[in-house]
Image 1 (cartoon, rainbow, N blue to C red):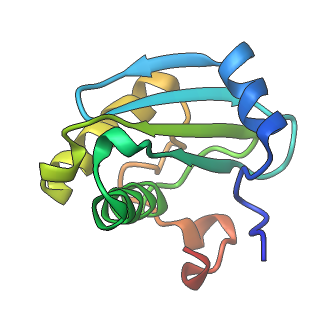
Image 2: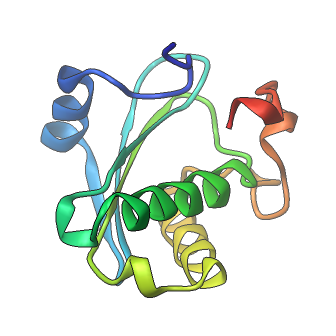
Length: 127
């Protein structure tokens, strides 16, 4: 079942890649684009260069958790692309880098540094 806060279709990803702004980091690359909706949506890209299925799933869990503890501004499509090397990184490193990139992109709300997704009406168990 598709979650309402996720990007799932190829066209949605293509739009963010084509028209969005990019913010590169050493572990992830962040692409953001305003979507005109009252919610923000998240998409993850973790290629096979990151590693096998176990490493890719671990990277996705890290990214989902790091984004879910932030209060994102409404109205953004956010795509996080994992880079090779994320599989050997600690969670704190991924979280720190994502927070910095989200701040640079202007996607975090005023209380985003310590906020939680529940502040925006997204149930915690959806992540």
